[in-house]
Length: 451
Ligand code: UD1
Image 1: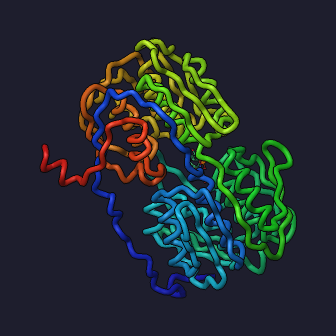
Image 2: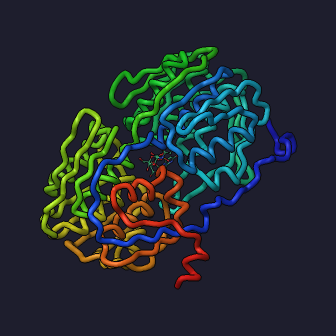
């Protein structure tokens, strides 16, 4: 049993982001034109940084997005004693030889819920870890019971006290049946990471089918793990004693790609997304096609042509979020911006997170006609004329979507809480500027001075 008293006082220091007090100022009404590179997937990169702790050998990851969440997780790993190098833009190297310090503090969890992905690999490789309960965030309660149950199914002993999970594997974790009551992305990944070094065979079902999970499987296989998706909803792992270092290029970010599709559409623009994962956007592209948006998929490009489209030429469409291959909940907010510009009434059903429609209040303040009868449903009537105003970002995807609304709006929008967007989008303002948008990042005090 590990006790808090056994733990060294932690060194993780809360460093407020320099971007914490920034706002975006967007002058709407500019037509976006040109091409934009799509960055590596946030939700794959974070898991691979965690997976790299499964071996003492050096791992090299390329196409890593330059985003706050990656920087935070890299810092958390460094504070554990892991060597994390960043030799070039979008390249990270991780070497976790002697990690003795197995404590992931509250500050890490408070900054980024995904830090909980360290539970599985650290427990499996080092036999113990103390990790903070990440609790909820602005899109819902977001419990971690499925992760904890999965570790227990693999033989871990886990106690919860004072906001921390004290987890220990007597001897080695042992392979077993991990049955989830419903699909969880990180739950699947945590179980899979833990099982790679466990003793024996593990079956995970229902396993999440997101492309980022398959990318993680590909990386683990390069590390020598015996892990395979044996059916669409099943992942099987044969535990190994050791894994080796590996190099991997991260897949493109389908959520960033969807965000730029909407940006082109709502500004009446013509934009080519370079390195875009068309094949991973099925349900989203079905919705945009039902709305009448002109999108063409190439081998690794997506072309969106909304030039010359009359306002209201898009049709309303009913959408419901679902685990992959359904419509990603992370694309629900951008899709709502698009629906606000479509003719007629659209119904939105958010099935994954209970507070993910809250941000629609801000979209409403910009002139969208939105009703939210309950926490999982919204009605959007369009096309609405959006007007620039002052809005506040509550979470990452809502933040990007308020930028989209601002690009489509008449006048200037001031968007507070820019740091939420930097968590998950690489250089978002720079990419929009290159497409001809008028967007600037200002310190909060500068906007106060100008007001
Ligand atoms: C991941 C993604 C996030 C995306 C989400 C759903 C990362 C870092 N984040 O989050 O961007 O929006 O998938 O596609 O990859 N749940 C429980 N108990 C648990 C775990 C989850 O009840 O222990 C519930 C959640 O509250 C939610 C549902 O399960 O209602 C699905 O969440 P999950 O797939 O686990 O989301 P994350 O992996 O946290």
